[in-house]
Image 1 (cartoon, rainbow, N blue to C red):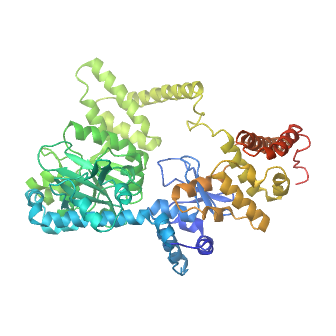
Image 2: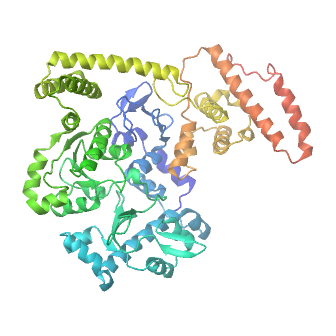
Image 3: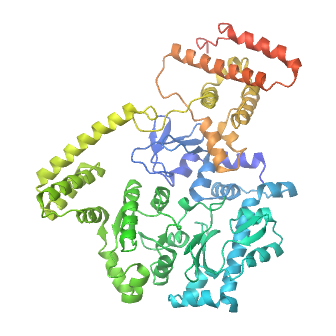
Length: 593
């Protein structure tokens, strides 16, 4: 779907960014704007800022930025047209549909084409499973105890024995090799085209909006790899999706069960535990923890009870904690996973295990304790110190004291002694942190990444400065024109901003509308949210502004000279070069505005 600039601006200006984002983030007023905890990364101190004057947001922790349209695209995983429709409905705006030209369709519809191809691939795999040629795969699912209703609900399938079956089917549907290669379902080279999945039962992976974005496949037999997943594509990001979340988010339970594999999720859903999800063939990520925080405050871990499962749980627990999620661990012994447990003991027993799920931090300490022989005084001392170090994760004193009381009783150490060890380790950690940051040129004292440097940062500062102080545009533009922004996307942003100044209406959020991809929107929005982080007096500001203008102008002239192909322009460029050497003549004063 194609929207005109006027339609996009109507939706953007008709959507109050504070009101829209406030539905997802607890915003609090701070000066002329609002702040809150960023919904796109884990943080405990608010660094997510919403600027109602500019109608844009920015997180100074992870760097995300954009307009209200960008936010909806990122948070809801919507395409640009979907975000437009969503916001238009919220604002009561009717959007007339504008048909794309054939060229625009080729340029803009690759994403929707891949969604169509994936949907047809999923339907093909399902049909294949139900055909005589899919008996091996169908028998596998039935032997695992799945009903026909569950198989249909999850769209499970079979890829067939041949290596070109799906490719041939989709080619007959009219898709090109370029489009098919973008799905990640095929290997296409000079030797021909081949299906990546064959002789495997198939698990369609859906995003939060029930669109098939990828696949997981389990091989029939002993071939390797046992499980194969779609590669990353423009639709499929393993770190930002969870298997089963499209169904789990609709469940009536307040918590979410986090499993290790697809079959565990499916078995739990069939048993009535429709709040189960799993990571996508890789280790659980902090991005997935942030996503889960949107839907729940409590996650129940059901990783396998073997050593690998315990290791995976220990890795996931800190990520969930950092995302502000309370985690508990479901113990399934003597069985390995939820699938085996439910088959052996049934739904009611699993419900009891849910109710008895262990506090995740106490689980971490219990696993840690197994590394020490606490009947040995030396080993017990090491364990106590390690336990004290683990307690440093709790910044809240009351919460930490409650854990100290519980652990001191369970592991035979006086509360005062354990509290003393915690304080000692906190002081040691603090001194190590200061030393690390002070000795590292790569980080500032707060541990964040170093400030951006180079011409790009100068572009950002000047453009953002002009938005804050539009009265300077005349003076600045006399020296630095739109043609002096040499690098994209700053060149396009400067061109659009200068045009707004010349038309007498400066709305930087409107500039973001010219870019449909979320990553581009974030980059453009970030340009207009860049500021000096230190307080400066008027003289310091004046020097800083002139330094920016000089740096950008000098860079522009030097680059034009370097890439010069028309000798007739050499003289004018040299005149410009000589002119900027006399900086007094190009000085901008802030005294008179």
